Image 1 (cartoon, rainbow, N blue to C red):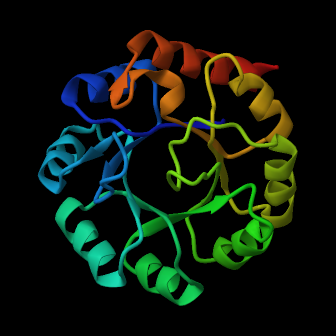
Image 2 (cartoon, rainbow, N blue to C red):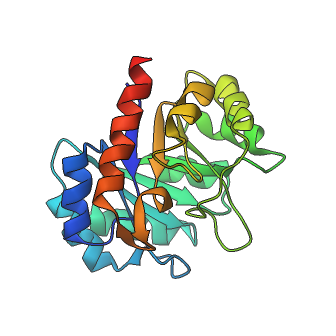
Amino acid sequence: MVKVKICGVTCERDLEGAAEAGADIIGFIVDTSTSPRNISIKEAENLIDRTPSRILSVAVTVFKSLERILEINRSLKPNITQIHGIFDEKILEKISSTVKVVPAVDANSSDAAQKALQYANLSYAILVDTHNEKGFGGTGRIHNWSQSREIRDKVYPARIFLAGGLTPENVRSAIETVEPYGVDVSTGVEAKPGVKDHAKMIEFVRRVKEAEKS
């Protein structure tokens, strides 16, 4: 079963909507001022506390320092921590000793597959995303899914989450091409940056389940 992660949830209303839509995993962006979906540690703590137990909570952040990541984990106690930015295997190993970790790799980077292989044994899963000059994720941009498929095949049976420009309209094709463990959506189910469209969330989950049956 392909897991659905809805990321960038900023308020209780959207948390409830994502849960009702059938999300398996919900992400909360913290300590990332460049993101329109960034919320405070206090806000994230409140939302994670309200996340239904059947749903995994994810603290999503850009790496600044090991100490800061550990501080976020202590404060929020998420099920998973998703890390974007620049870090190495030693850092990842230390983080993974305290929490399930999902490092992000840029599908368009020439060393994406190499990084994914290096991270695989230390991670709960690898996020394959589309980066640009404005940010490490949440760009709403699609990359060539054949690149993600190559990464998926190289690291298998390690888990891959596919992200980057996914929408209700294209997620089925993405799943059929990449066969990921899960799909990660943010921009593609929004009414505007930081505000989710509940009908789009429902339709996204429906399309994922539809793809599984094909």
